[in-house]
Length: 521
Image 1: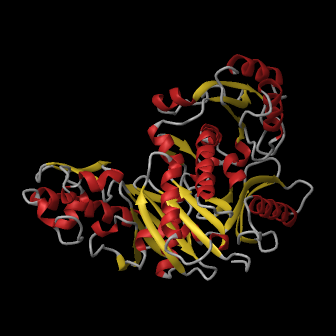
Image 2: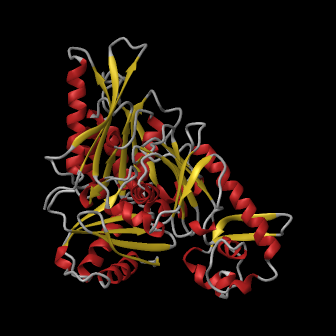
Image 3: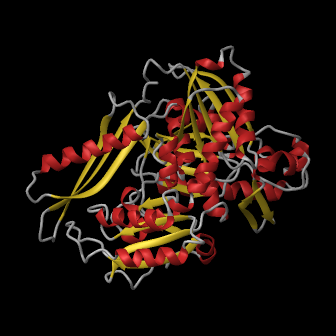
C-alpha cells in the first residue's frame, strides 16, 4: 500500500450480518465488529462503524480509505426488488431477430425489468466491418414510445466489443430523445463476445443503477454521520476495488463481491495463495478456488437469478448450508434449506429460545459449536443429526467440484457460520481455520487493490501483434486508473491471447487485467 494510507476500514454487508474491521498501513487488524444487517443500509453500516471506531484510540481523521462489499445487487435480482424499468435496444437486425431480447429470462423477472425492447439494423462482423447501416430512426421511434415508462436504457450490438460505434451512436439518440440524465448501459464495456449473454449482463447492469445509488448513498451517509472524511470504494467480483463513480456506471460488477472478499481475506489470514475456500454465511456457503491469491474466474457463462450472463465472475459453487439454514422433515426424510432464518437466527433458532430447527442447532447438538442453550435441542437430536450429515455431504460434493487437480489441497474455512462444518473433508490436505475467520470478508475488502480489465477482439490487418497487445494493456491500465488505482503503480497482472481461426481477415481476442494499489490522496 502507498505510504499515504494510514487507517483503512473494511465493511461487508451480507444478508445476515454487517461486518466492519479497521486495519493499519501494515494490514494489522486493530478492531472488528459484527452486527445484524438492517433493512435500510445506512443504519447497519453506521452501527458497525460506531462499534469499531469505539475500539481504537485514534482520531477519525487518520482514516483515509473505506472499502465496502455488499450483496445488495445480488439480492435485488434474486428477490426481484428495487430494479429499474429498462428499455432494451439491440443493434442486430436482420441477423438476430429470431431470438429477441429477454427470450431466456424468467417471466417474473422480465415483468419487473422490461419497459420494452426493440431490434434495430446495425452491428458488425467479428472483423469490425459493419453488417448494415445503423437504424437511427428506428431507435428514436422506439424510445418515443417507451419514454414514459423507461427508467434506464440498455444498448447491445452484434460484436460491439470489436467495434462499438453503433452502440455509441444509439446512446446519442437516447440523450436526444430521453434527455441527458437517464442511465444508459453499453454492452461493449460489460461482457465478452457472446451476444445474448452480454445483452443480459447489460440489461441487469441498467436495472441495478438504482440499487447502486442506494448503496453509495447509504455508505456516504454513514460516513458523514460518523464524521469520517475518507475516500470510499466498493469491491467488485474479482476481489479488487472500484471508485463510487465507477460503481454507478457498472453496478453489475458488484454481484460476486461478497464471496470474492471472503476469498481474498482467507488468502491473507491463512497466508496461502492456492487453496479451496469455503465461506459460510447465515444463508448459504460459497465454495471457490484461490489461484495466486485471487479467486479463480469462471470460464463459462454464469447464471444470476435465472439469467445467463458472460461478464467476469468468480468460479463458485453455492450450496444452501448456512448458520441459519432451516431444517425440516423427519430424521428419515430430512430437508436442509434452501430457506434460512437469516439475521433472525438469535430469535428463531432453538438454542436461542425460538421454535425453528437450524443448522446452528445441529452444530450445537453435535458438539461442533457452543452457543445459546444447548439443552434446547432436546427432542430434536435425530432430526438435527440427519440434517448435519446431509449438510456435510453437500460440502464434500461442492469441494470436490471446485478442485482443479486430483491431489489434496488446503481448505480454508471462513465466515461466521463456519462452526457448522465438519472437522474433516475428503480430498483436502488440511483444514485451516484462521484467526478472525468470522470477518474474513471485511478484511478482504480492506486489503483489496484496484483493477481494470479489457476483453476485446482486435483486427491485425496493417498492425503487428505487439501493437495490439500494447493497445489492450494501455486500455486495461486506463480502466484500473478510472476505478481508483494509483497511476504510477498500476501493473499488468494477466494477459491472455486467443487467435481466432476460420476468418478471412486475421483477428485476435486479447484479455488483459491490470491492478495496482489505491491512488494517493
